[in-house]
Length: 112
Length: 109
View (cartoon, rainbow over the protein chains, first blue to last red):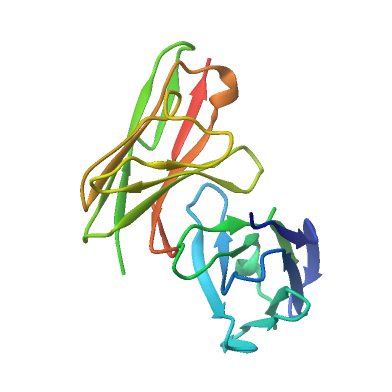
């Protein structure tokens, strides 16, 4: 089955700097890659996703890149703000299967 | 979009008892997913609940421990049976890969 590895487990950056979180997946049949933000005590929130027919997707300060050959994808947050502090999870699935396999999570801290 | 109401939001239960968690979706969905999130950990899929058929369980999870009902396209329940302290966790339902219930924080004492 699918296995998703996520790095780093913790990340601390200065406000205004960029943050990058990386994930690798094992199943070449996976073709949908979402990212979630989970604030303390709250439910996960989908922030961006990418399908395997696209190499990059951007939404304001957030972007995701996908390298199908290497089976890895990354989340990029630019101009970080204190409210970006949270745990971020990557995941992978086959579009039709619908079930998600999550990475281990990255605790991002933005230092003022 | 979908709005999911999950309850209870939290509970403290005695070991050996059972707790049923409910999720109500404001639209009809084919599949509902139940996840467990242990403290400080990632989400692990317990099972997929399809209306009109038996739930599909992931490796390490069994129906006797986590029976699931899916009586219609907007509702599902997950029961955590014969609980032990190791079952203390957050349980979440989800639909469409994008929407989660608010979670049930379960503490077993």
